[in-house]
Image (tube, rainbow, N blue to C red):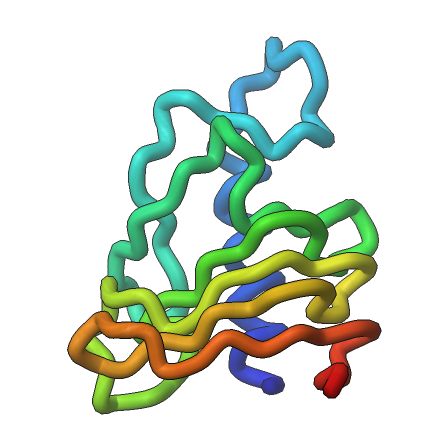
Length: 120
């Protein structure tokens, strides 16, 4: 979990530093020129910044839709650019339905979360 937090902090620093000075709203995390996201270790992770995916707010908390890739997960069984899991964050905690993937790209399971904890 610490690796994910540091990856998110590093990622937000890269995104904010790549935004132009004349951006209308620097807090939107929107960069149409950014097609890949560099994370710890220098691997490129695909993302869609213009749609708000993988957004970290000014307090460093994850918000909205997130796609976690193999490199971000730290799981060596996953290709660095393969999906590991995806879902929504609210104030840094997993919220709603999350989809977990197997290394081959198939769905491992879907789980419902509230405040970062599994709801049964």
